[in-house]
Image (cartoon, rainbow, N blue to C red):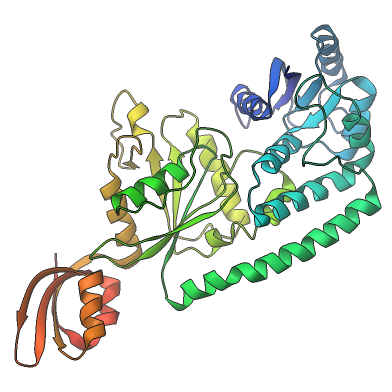
Length: 414
């Protein structure tokens, strides 16, 4: 038996309320909560006491009682005073959008880092809301959600306990971050560029990573599923194609509208790769007619991460779901049908390493490390030999010239 919920939102004219509530419904569904009614009110901003006007709140209360709702879910993050006031009106559990998202994060946290970050975000969210949340969480629903809130154990809604927990989590998270910097330092020392996949949840980031791994014939695929926040794990893979330089490709947590305030700060360790990327791929669900709203959210999060000035490419996915091929100049791919994946890989290389050149290199036979590098990271067109050296005609990228400057005879634009 699923818990039954009524959804409430504000139509402030800035975003499409019906679409926003549909997204809220999908978040609830992820937690096995059934939506049985939706209400919204046109207002420039929420009522500071009751979120909606008192008349609308009375209407929702009547509907909640008539429909026997277990939960009332609000589409924005409620303030502590709003929670306390709303407790007086409703005899059901009061939940906001942030609480739902954090609950989903809690269920999906698989790694130590994700668990620590989720736990810290939950505790910082709960701390100022203790009074209202204590009453609300005590109202048990009838289904699988059961008003227990985020996490595997029952929450102890005690200020001192939460403060101690926050301090302990911050200490553990700092230790984890320190341990996790080792691999990053190794990549930095090797000067391997980093490419980060970002975008709205369920836009196809993990599928794109897996597709590029298939192109280079790697079997190190990552988990992907058509659900919101399929994973909170940051996946990092080395992309190395014969005849090309290597780069690191990172798949990050999906974004969503109205992320909890505690999210970005708590997840800075997981999202560290984004702000230290050489290139960002903004993965956009091309089949969603409202994807321009997703782009607004993605850009906002990138700004919070101080990553808005990093070179970014917009890549549209799910071309296979479109009835007609788009005529715009954007790069559209299909991970299902492997469409335009080579073009995507080429675009990444050009943005990381510059344009392609035809170069002639002369390498003495004793410089075996350079010969090995030529064979591994350039596309050899022709090889000839003299008494003391090898002559190579190769296709390389502009930024590779530095590695071969002592052996370069001539270059030519392609």
